[in-house]
Image (cartoon, rainbow, N blue to C red; front, side, top):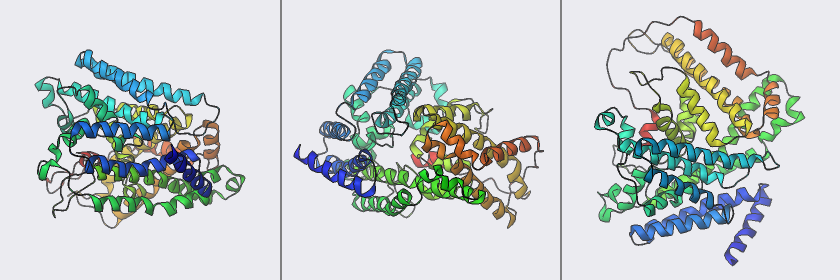
Length: 490
């Protein structure tokens, strides 16, 4: 208790110094603490799976109670237990649907409870880890369903589905070990059960002595270095480029061009806090060893199996997909492989209509919660995504020669314009995710005359009626690279 009291004094002083809520500083402290705790459990404790699992669960529950409150572990335990019973006793063809409905429904209940609170501002509570638990429960249930499908059905599965299905449910002990795996519980990212199992039984490291993870001390230092490198920008965002400025009279008094520019600057700086949190979480994954992802062509070890984001790809996106594939990567993997790809696709692996896109964004919105701003953001993002798809189909061929090569240098103009337009549109939509409610968001958008919506809607209408350009014929048949997200997760 004395240690907790000293920690609270430290948290309070830091919170006052940087003018942040105490709960947010406490959360960051817990993210820092996960790394040494993970190192002790998975590097220093003897490689006995049962012992490591018990210690991991105990550490996870301890951090959760300190960070969120003494009873904040109960929702995850309740939901996990109910879903395990469903998977155990409901026939496999139906269990995954029941688990998906219940886990999303229970998460929705927790989100709705937040709406009853007097403040519209976002706060930390049990919903934060429950969002990760929900992904774990739904993926486990669907993978168990896939593992019990017919041989003919398995032949038609995607490579991702074939690599992740399971034929038997884990024991209840292993199940709780997976749910309360220390590096992933508080802030994610989620991990697939087959990866967790391979990590715990050592098969992931079968080529290393004692089936133990190789040394990751230097990658851990690099991970901390990436996190600390964002701190100056994080403080800059808090003190100079806060999103709160977009709600002030000073912002409304600016000329239109500067208001549009500040949409980009202030929202771009806002993203830094997410990069900071994801870098800390990734470092705990690296410390445990589960982030090991083989070796590159030069024989260097890769520790990028569980990356939360790829900032450069986000800040310089060539298209909308570059943002969605590289922002909150594990969640994008979940939405893609467990929602989007579950709809009928054509021979090229593309949706036959807009329903998969709408369903994916809707699921993402429900997963995030019921603050109206989330739905404004995701509906707006869906419009931008569909417009971008249409633009790529109708405009990009104009910059490609008949032999499949690019028309240079004009193709550079197309690419640069795509980066600028894509980034500004999503930074235009971004305040809805921060302001959370409709009146404030709509008023803010009105200050730039709803330029993002107007541009996307007019472009969509114009491109819909535009003629299809002639298709180019490539001179070679080199296989295309797999999608970024699938490659990074497999």
